[in-house]
Image (cartoon, rainbow, N blue to C red; front, side, top):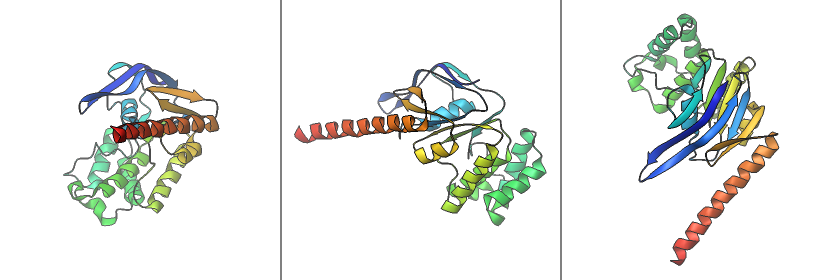
Length: 233
C-alpha cells in the first residue's frame, strides 16, 4: 500500500505555522489511479514530494515502495555542470535502466535539439522542465506521482506529455493532486478532495467536483468577509 498513516505535515510560513496534512489517513494500491482535487496554496507539491520520499512528515508515517516514481518533471537530480545527455545517462545508470535507450528517448522526447548536448547550467527553466519530463517518461514505474500540471512549455508539448503519461498508465498506477478537474477526470478512477488537512474520498467524480467547488466558494466568501471588514474599519 501507498499513502499516509496518522500523518501530519506542518511548515513555517513567515510568522505562522501552515498545516498541509492534519493526522491524515489515506492509502491506495500501487495500481490505483487516484486523483485528488486541491485548491491553490494547499501544499500539492509538498504532498507529492512526501510520497516520493523527498520530504518527511512532521508526525506519522508515509507508506511507499520501490516502484513509486519521483514527481513527474522533477529536475532536482540534474547536475548543472553536466550536459542534458550526460545527466540522463548518469541517472539511468543509477536506476539500472538501459542508458543508451534512455539517452535516445530523452533526446527525442525533450525536443531540445542541439541544446541537449549543452551543460544544463545554460538551460532556461523551460528547457529543464522539458528534459525533466522526458526523464520521467524514460524511467519505468509502478506508480507515477504528479501535481497540478502534466508537462510544461507550449501547448503542443504539454499535449505530448499528457499522451505519454496516458500510455504509461495502461500498465501503472497514478497519484495526481491538482486543481484542474478536467485533467483529474481524464486520468482518475478514484477521486478525492483535500480540505482542512484531510483527504476525503468520494463515490464518483461528480461528487468530488461538487465538494471541491463548495470548498472553493467558501474560500471566496471568507476573503470577501475579510475585505469587507478591512473596508469598514
